Image 1: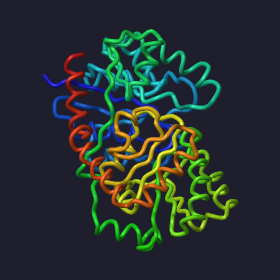
Image 2: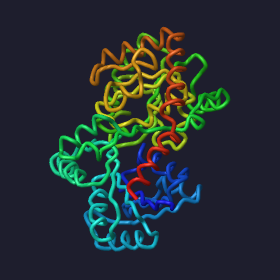
Image 3: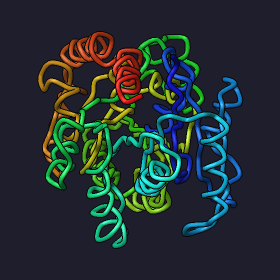
Image 4: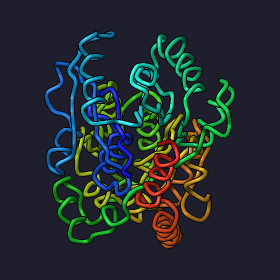
Length: 372
């Protein structure tokens, strides 16, 4: 019997790694029948998961809502659960965790959640929402943690260890792979010459990503290596501030701030190295995508990064907040292309053998079957 699952998430901007995981999982599900529901602000016009769902004929629903809790949202959600015969509600954030908890009591579904991380910065999130969420998840039948660090946080908040499973993210190595033709086209679009060495990063431009530290480090490195270029793909609350920071430092002409991009694979192919300077991560999709694209990777030792990258084998890991560590690792990449290439090839091999999306999906569907 096929398990019927509702993926439930509240939209924040264009989203990020969780959106990719939810959408691709629904498209490739073999042992589960997956419906997707997003709670979206009424003002949201474009939304990447909506467009992906339409292109791949997924069972996709949006519930438009304002701030706070609305009875109409609850009514529509219960109707969706009933009409699809949902057995498992798989939530992905503190708001939908609460809704899954409530649906378990009114509609006899099994609540589960993926804890992607606790990265919000408002006082309400830090002081209220996240502590309550962790306590709430302790009552769930199953919680997936995208890193061992998150799993430990949930257990400290009262979750039973046997109910919290670490399941790192995965990517499709066929979608993210080297492509010389695509590389030439994207580099031309980004105005990168053959002699330019393009460092890049993908992700939301929010405080925990520390793009400020990346720009500051780039300023130092650019003085030593004038052909360096910095590519930042992503949007967020700090995008304008980061552009101003690069302008004030005199390196804006050497930077490419691309905004939100739906063609991450193409952007990555244009790069010569990938850098992640985050203070906090769950399990970074962008890092896995860069590894699969066979790029040299430099990342801070946070979240799942130490499980994904073997320092000195697949890439470089540096302490979070270490500007000197990041500069030193990037300098090694730039100055020792042979070593960088060896580690990049090892990184791709690791994704193919350990962190493919299909491998992750098999484990997730096994969890669904066990719960149902």
